[in-house]
Image 1 (tube, rainbow, N blue to C red):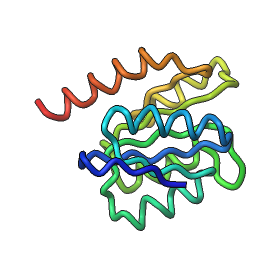
Image 2: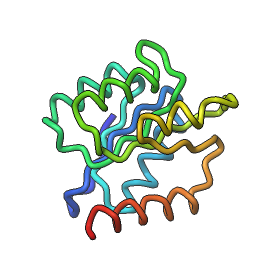
Image 3: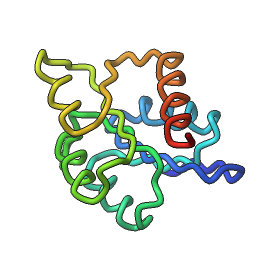
Image 4: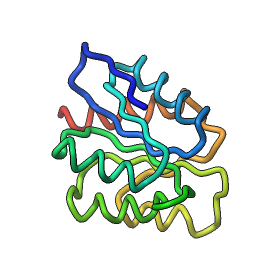
Length: 131
């Protein structure tokens, strides 16, 4: 599934196995001006990332998915790109999960996602990259 906003060059990749969650995130990012590529697992996300030759500006991944989970996806992406902004999302937070995500230079958001907080975070990321 791919949603496209052709007015802006920023591209986001979403890996989320829940159909409704994937659609909601894609619509949210589309409204923020991202061209959105949304897939249902980490393996497809990694394939998509390779196909786009590193043109992705943001990765949002669920941590618990079939085929390749978010932890594995983040690990593989970090081998290629150390600075890509990554947001990990989960509805099953464990005490050590925040540390695991931070070690890989990513940010953790718990479900249900507070979209105002996510918008603020994305604005900060964008400002850091452009300064």
